[in-house]
Image 1 (cartoon, rainbow over the protein chains, first blue to last red):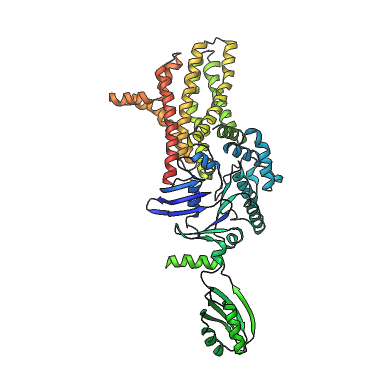
Image 2: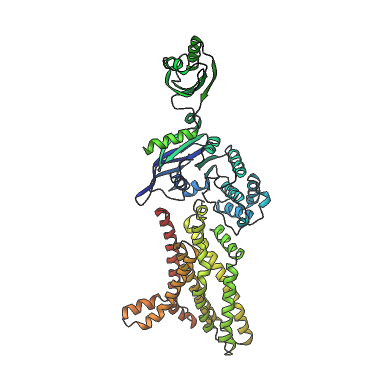
Length: 313
Length: 236
């Protein structure tokens, strides 16, 4: 478990991260989301102990990073934005070196490295020089490096940036697999990626936290139920009727034909009977067949844009 | 610390750097050996060792330029600093790796001693004192140049800074003879690495000089650690 308490990092006058507090509970995949320059990398550098914060506290399993650096760092595996690789080493010898750094017992080292090589799909290139590897493999070696010493927490900074679509899918699969046994905190500006992988999201903007929520709660819509309906009735008769329903807050016409109208209804979700039933009864009374009805969930993209736009205003 | 030392030592020999250092050192020292010892039919090893010590000035930057500047340039320092290893251990590990390559090279110069021992006469006490001064001088240069590698943003800058600093130390002797103001002269004489090694070459074991070299070395290692640590706070 990682906890940040009122962490601020200043570079001169500029605050890269300001008053940031959040908790990454054990066993979850947590996405750190933000535009370029939002402070994601700085945040990750601080919570892995690479940079000390200007003020505030980082706690790893309840231990302070400042006073118990060694114990804290032993619990975290970190893949920085640019994988920290030594080009003149082979994959196997490099991973051996990282195991030494992470204090893996010399006797257990060989088996540990072999297991990591297998997990990360590096078997074919284990004996090759890192400098000769393709970008996708380098990224995998970067992830492999973070796994050395079996840290329970993995911190990954934009793990899929610059990879081709197939490699992206593979790396995401690997992260999902690792998420079953590790707490993973990863940053991204790719919203679909975060939506696919994470259980929890933290949205950063200009170095400050805008939102921290479970993925489900975030995309479920915020206090409104959004219904998409296609109804066989002209818009002139339909709209006033819809507006007369007590649960409907707003009606938006998406497409209007002579005899059919598509509308988006924003309803209060806790109405009784529920909005769908009310709509059905209304349309039965009007003798207007319902062609289609679906609930619209907002995508993470909508949420993200709304939250960051609010701040910019 | 051991892990860092081991990796750096391997890196010297996985890349050409280690071979270049040893090769150039031995080539130049062979030339010196030929001119001072063989041509003169002399067995004056201390003079030869004194000459070899000028090679540190030229070659130590080759050993140290990569050590810290490259980590910073390639951002591999992120691995070291987020591992359960302390900053002093990182710096010491790197220092010891450079020192190891230097000591291997010094051992190889034993061949010259062997040749003199076969065809001439070797005075062990004198020889050991000379070698001690020679090695201590190398230790000091590596510490200074390692510090400059820690200051530089890339290898080339690190090398240029190191060459400059080494030459400046050498020039202290020249400045000292040129300057007539007594207190300044005294300070320059105190700082000069080459003047400090003279007693060793005369077969004297000077504790003041040993102390000077060791504190010079320790001071620059501490400065290196301090520089790297303060950079983390500034976040540059």
